[in-house]
Length: 525
Image 1 (cartoon, helix red, strand yellow):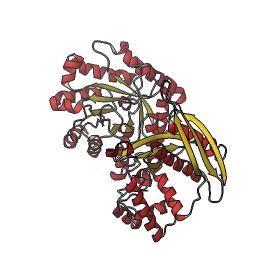
Image 2 (spheres, rainbow, N blue to C red):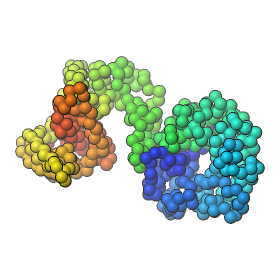
Image 3 (cartoon, helix red, strand yellow):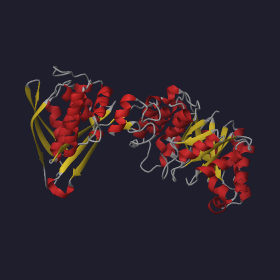
Image 4 (tube, rainbow, N blue to C red):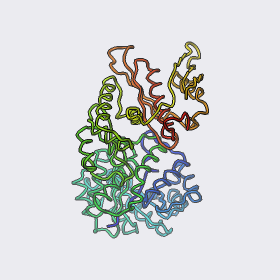
């Protein structure tokens, strides 16, 4: 069975609240999705806005797809307009893509009230537009908008619409659940009705407003759909579209279809995270297959079983989709969690050490620490407990001052640290006390560890614990740091928010030095 994967991230996906891509961003997203081996990449709607028009103009010279065919999206001709005179169709031809996807109305309510044309005129708009683009040498897909609602309201007319597109030369008619409310048992019946009864392939396009977009896509494939449309990470208007990453993994690993091949599938986690960054989105932690917690295990019972059976609590090998098993350490875990985490990090942990570390984790989490959200801090704790790391620096003291009154906002900090037996002093300014302290530390150790120059703060979260204690409440700070290649999370807890921030920052610095090759007995890498 051959099923084509059609990516509409650059059009439908950009309708997600908060997503706004530059033309350069769109080109890069297309390159990333091509790495995954998808079959069609919809670039947008040429002529609808200057950005999409520029995208197609630049794509001709700058976008060199190895696997996917670039597709332009547009609408059927407008009412009472000849196809040769329609500006929208002219823009589609001008985009010079090998494939065009046209959208047209399949619900009588929209034909009558939104388009306000006769139903026969709507059928003519569909058929003439498809035929015209075929005459221009294009492969044509037809998106039947609101198809499932239209089929419920008037099944005969919905069939007339897709039949008009198919007989005019559409290679695939795509049944769209535009409102996202269709249920799998209805979808299965309707798609099966059309598969084999039209002179072309049947595809599907689902939105996730009822949480069934992936399920609806899968049942459609099982009854013969040959094209599945969706978006990266499920981006899209309202609740989003069918998540292509989940769909692709399900079809490859659960349905046994060979769609993109093992090598491409192993890139999926990396591509998912890269596209999320380009779209200014945080990848959902619990997203199937590619999420940071998709193969994360926290419960002690799970970790104990995983130590004996790698697949005891995992439905697939995470390596198949480019992810990895991730053991979280918390007060809920047992010694097996510690030992398994040590093995993951390449640290030998004996039973006594595992028990000692577990007691320390429980004590600290009682104070407010959260190691399941701060893997880098836990690795440092484990290495310190096993004697496999020596502190690269120690804090002597720091002082922070914030200017108040008019023109407030600038903070000043001084910092004294010991490096290889030498006391170093540094000062810095910033737009807040934590930023100033960061500058002060970097100035104090300037030149000792060049890798620190590449670090930047990705995220900074403050949580007030025991809020009933008012200003005396304990504060937990979680910091996410990146060197441009990888990110890691660290944690600090203290009654003073600046002190808690320093503890998290200090772990972030130490982890960066450690992972860049700093070894025990050496002051610098």
